[in-house]
Image (cartoon, rainbow, N blue to C red; front, side, top):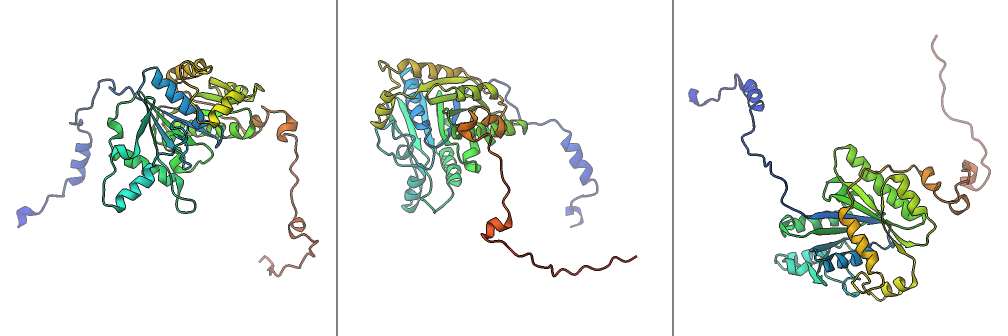
Length: 335
């Protein structure tokens, strides 16, 4: 029995010696074989991310690229334009239904294709029944089980809500899940505020050792007032394309018509966007302070010259309050 007792006398030193040994596992030195570009697109709700992505992905497919479009917005409307207004089953709802039935989720249950584009929706919980960000995390966990890292695509485009900054929606930037980010904005303060927040998040995680950068901005509904272009210049990112505020685009979008196809009057616009998205490198943006952001607009348009007036307790109570004597006991200090 005595011989079976482990010798702990020099245990600490043995651990130190092992720590200085060269690793025995072979570390790959060859360049990566995967050519996939994973790109996250952010923007304010309603700014036109889904419209931009549906037409961009369709044009990329027309150019012979293999494209996967993943909707990461709880509204689950990313693929609606691509599928002519028809909603496809989301990963979250399909996973729940299959689990209750004791079945496994198959790729054909959640991924669909049209015009050479493969598309799916992560989905999210019903209103008041869960966290949308947690739903995003759960959706990507399921994608990994379905073999996400083994899929062979030229581009994977992720449509993310830019207004919400909680964990799940920041995954691509915080966890290096994509190579670069593109923001969709317009010439209005709210959309540029969201774009600036995304730039701020990218810069924050780059300082922590992350590698995700912002490749540029797509100006949607461009009325040529110039605020979005001025924002891009100050932040240090390029304008990848400017989609005009045109009635023809609005009408066709409302009818779920793809305009990013060869032969369309807008084909050259999306051909240029596809080329720029493919080649734009990830950059480290320089996010603006709030006053700098307001400075892009005329003072009368954004209230830049408004002076903040502090409220009083009388204001809050609605009446003049009689000051009451304090009941606090104050003791004389000992000499």
